[in-house]
Each structure stands twice: as structure tokens, then as C-alpha cells.
Image (tube, rainbow, N blue to C red; front, side, top):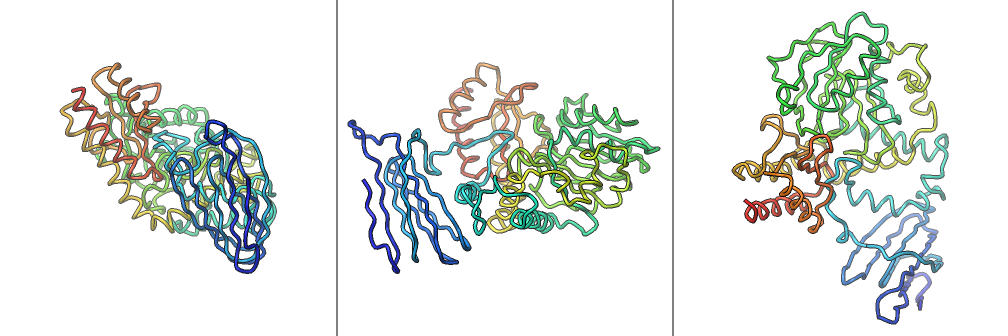
Length: 463
């Protein structure tokens, strides 16, 4: 059944109702509404009536836009202002959740939670980008629409991190694993001095394993004797100021330890794997020689890796390197040496816009992250050892809260109860076990509060 009214200058209302089955519940049918508008600015208001839940949204696009809305069950009502032409198409699909209230609180360490406004915009623009007439998945990386997205992503990163003009921003592929090799290939190969690696956890160790294939590597500090439960103090570091570079992992996701200040490298270039805390706080960029971060934990989807490198270090990249593995080649081609991960860059740019416009910048983001992590660490500290945190207090991560319970059976019970409450992906890394709550930038405080309340309740019932 469908009904359309008032198609004209004053707007139009279209109502689509999926036909109920004999039992009175909606069938697995959906109405796909394709709307093409002919005016440069307009508003769309959607009200979804699904299972008693209501979700209202407003969106704005430029011209000529095309928009796709889909509802999988219940009633769909769309009202738009200005003239338009509407097409209704009926299709079959499985019943799916359609509102934000159906989402779980996802504590996955990566790929991880994304901001809901970003996901909604991706959904709205997936069929075709405003003014383009095609999806981001379809357009050429050499054409103006994507070049505009690429430019915007670089500009937004520069604003958020206050990146000086003598740095290059690269968008690569391969994740941190590839950077474990590219960093020493470009910055250590051919150098007379060794690189130094500070080992504060699992990922720092993996980075060092690749670096030794390219040259001499020194370890000025290794947290193995402390089971990687803290970062080094300044007095413990013996940095060689002539080192080719000093490599740190700013946040170890498995152990839950984090540098919240930059180590003093005595003039040697500081290289940082910031994959799991990228853009969680402001950074003094001038203290870094190179930062790399895979996006899927805190900045976007899997598939795009950000590299921010000081220009003078690009001169170390040798022509004998394979082309894709050469930082200088990527910088000269403005990240277009090959087809870049276009969708990942598009989403990363939306995340940057969310941080700038919705959050208010990285100072505000840091305040949120401190408040969220405190909610959980306060429960650990007040549990009389029932929850045993892995990281020492002065080294605790804002991103990954790691802890153990008294035994494996209680941990399994804890995880099962969390799952029932919509608190998912809390199991610790397979190498260490335990519990890990990854509370990246996009994790809403409401999710952390629910986890805190559940932890308090579970402690009282099982202590």
C-alpha cells in the first residue's frame, strides 16, 4: 500500500507501509525511496516508526543531490520541502534494525566504533555524493570530486593537529604492519647510526622485529621485566642523540599502557606508532619526525594509514627502494602514486569534521577521554582487587582499559552478562586474556557509564 499527496510547490508527503503478514508482523519487504531534488538547498525530515521507536533526522545537501532512504520494516514517512520528483521501488530484504537505539555499545579494539553522525552521513551519501551523481566507491581518484575530498582531509588534519608547513601528510595502505617495515627502509637504511626502539608492549616488539632486518637497532628500555605494565620514566631512558631515530608506540592496546607526554629524544627524530590513540589529544607536532597510524581504531575504517613526516627526513628515502615503499615517491605524487584507499580517506575526513565541528577540537576530545576512562578506573580502584588492572596507574591508557577477574570462570560469566546488556567485544587479546574495554574517541559516554554500572553490579553479586 502506498499513498502520495500534495506533489507541488508546497512540498510532498509520501507514506509507505509494508504489508503485514497474517500474524500481524511486518514481512521482509522494504520500500526504497529514491528522491532527486532540483533545488540547491533543501531539508529532509525522516521519521521512522519501527517497533515503537522513533528517530528523527534532518540533512542538508548541495545541488544536484540524490538521496537514498531505506526502511526495512514498519512505517516510513518522509516529508521534504521544495519541489521534487519521487520514485518508489519495492524490494525484498531481511528484517534489520533501523534506529540508533538498536545499536550495541561496541568496545572492539579495532576495527572500532565510529561516530553515529559519521555513519549516518555515509549512509545518506552512499548512493551518490552531493553534486557528483555517483558513489564514493565509484568515482576516480584523479577527478575533481575526490581530489576535493583529499584536500579537505589534509586541511582538517592540519587544523586538528596544528601540523607545521614543513611536514607532508600521506595516505597509504597496509596498516601499521607495513609501516613497521617502511620506517626502517626509509629512515634507517644507509644510516651510520642505529635506530632505538622503546619497547612498552606487544606492538613495539613487532615493530622492532622488522627494523632489525634493515639495520642496527638498540633497545634503550624494555618493559618485559615489568610485564609491560608501565612506560619508562625520563631517568630510565638512555637516548643516543645521534640515533637514526627513536621509535615509540604511543599506546599499547593489548597491555593498556600509554605515553601521555612525548619522551625526550635529545634531538634524534622521534618516530611514533600512534595507531590506537591518533587524535585522542593535541600533539606538539614539532617534536615528531614521523607519525603513522592505521585508521581503524580511532580515525576511520580499516584500509587507510596516515603518515605525517617531516620533509627533511624524506631525503633519506633511497631510489633503490621499491616504488610503493618509498615515502618520497608518495609525497611527490600527493598520495596518488597508486589508487589510494578512496573510501577510507572519505570517512577519515568525515571523522575529522566531527572532531572539529561536533566535539570542538582535540582539547575537548582529551577532556572527554579523560572523563570516560576515569569512570572505569575508579571501579577498578574501589573493587578491593576483584578487578585487577594490568597497567600501573601512572601509565594507564585513555583508550584501552585492561583488567583481570579472579578466575577464568568468573571472566566468562562477566563477558556473557555484558553481552546480554549490549556491551560487546570486551574479551582481552588472545595473547594475554582478561578483559579489555576499548573506549576510543567515538565511544559515547553513555556506553562507558553502562559498563561502569554493570561492573559495579557484577562485583557486588560475585565478590
